[in-house]
Length: 217
Image (cartoon, rainbow, N blue to C red; front, top):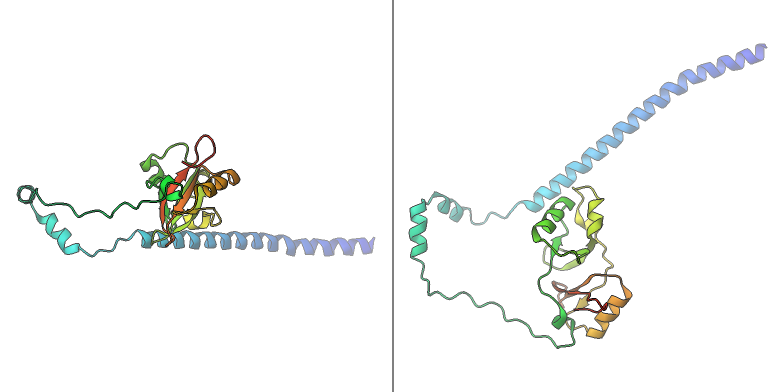
């Protein structure tokens, strides 16, 4: 019995040491995770603020307009020459009939890769895109195609997540001079509602929608 007593006493002192150590470890681990989460939130907030800060080049003109009275603004508008012609827009490029450029719709919805999930959802609601759109296209600061994100993925992601982190960079795309048959083959191979169309500078210039037959339109 003396051996058993000594073993029990040793076990007792071991528990005295182990239980507080376990509690301290759990406390410190939780604090460390909290610090990391806070650092990540601050970093994301900083990046979002920097990306949304406009380049204030025309502050002088803006301040001048802000100081004008309503009557002064009205007089200014009345003195504008109504016969002035607008600047000629860039000519519309003509593409071969069987090319992706001829099939595409130039009204395309895209989001910057630096935008957050919350900002992207807000832009989707404001744009009132159709229900047949299941993806949104992601571009960089120069308008170059970066990838796409499935819209339903946005619902399950934190609001402050940067779109760049969610982007599928391996998504298929076509060039403006891609043949119509190749476009149809892509729709047949990939289950997509639309395919982005890029020019030869990798800029997003349009999209081709899948029609009821599974072809591009």
